[in-house]
Image (cartoon, rainbow, N blue to C red; front, side, top):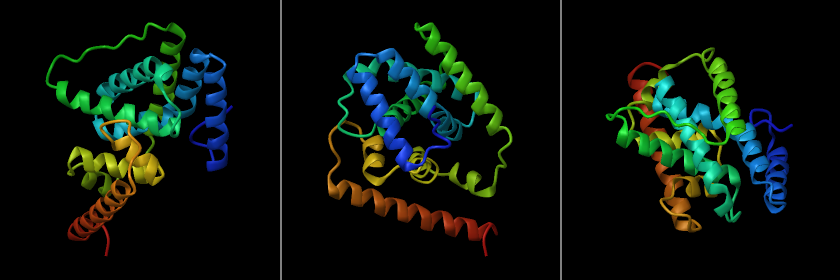
Length: 206
């Protein structure tokens, strides 16, 4: 069985083909469960890093899985499913930032097996996250604007290719242009320079 933590690029390509085969065969429930099992752990880690609140991250992750489940029938497969999942996670995170001052709502998935899978991925991944060492660079990232944090999380931690990254950060589902991808690269390099300067100022690097 595929798992995102252990996938090489070649294995990920095979996993994407498996997902497409399930989709083409009409097995949408199986495809959704495979997506959550294969990409769920890294999506959850991404959201925990962005939300920085375990309980809220649980809700955002559940909402992300709900959107994946409901949106998969309309997915056009003109890009990687992984990039599409990160785009959904990004939108769910941004929605959360808009409503975080309101009463937190608990999202209940109507598909019981998927609901159990979401809880499984969430709890097992959270157990690993509790063993991670928080460093000064994580604190520095937290001072950045949300969209800049998203860019760093998706490029550095999720290691999304540039075109997939552009898709994940886009406000629509149009194919990113070469100029948009190039602009994203420049923005990323600028952020790296800014973080390095901050790290030197705080004595984190020589």
